[in-house]
Image 1 (cartoon, rainbow, N blue to C red):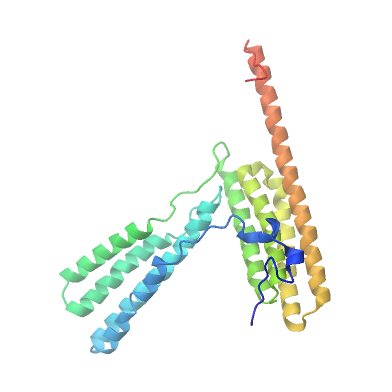
Image 2 (image 1 turned 120 degrees about the horizontal axis):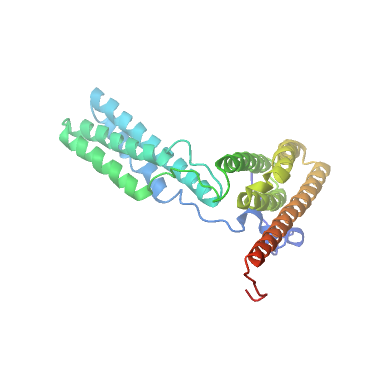
Length: 298
């Protein structure tokens, strides 16, 4: 289905504009590393198809196995890079459960070894191909994150709770982004991106201070799950009927939700500032009792 794209001088410009808020999810976005070299990993083994069907039965089987292993390695590498980017984007995150890039390196070595055996029939050359391929893949794409990332001074149980909530919230946001595409309405997509930006502001605030999780849990759980369900229903209805009433109601819902998320995030930040003022006051009192006085310029 053709999609209309908005811009500064498009008919949608009056409503969406070019303000930072209107840029939605593109604000602060970074270019993904899951392209370029990774795409070459999917292309490089394709000549094995020719080798497979110009060889005997044994060559056919070995080359197809090598092709499958190398394509699986490419897929694991791409997924590993995406997982690492998500890990690096967060201040509180758990290490990926499966070291995808490391498995990709291993499968790359095995795949090259099998392809080498199919071509030479010996063992020395395939072993060299396997070792060199695995090492070069590891150097090219690096290792997976191997440890959880948290905040110093906060207990691990609390950071784990934050990581679980953030993971769940991100899954809701991803589901919303996938669902809204079915509606085929660019303006609705932009509006959803603005709402998602306010949600991620709250996520970063909670990551900065996990003590805020209790106050934000309802927003990142119940409210966000409801927003996901509403987005799925709107996309299904609008894709079938282009119901302008449903579209208007959905836009109003996103506006209400965004205002609430922004207000709650602001309140969390104000509470954190109040906590800091209290800690500074207590520290000043303790220093005064020890005979140390701080001037206003300190």
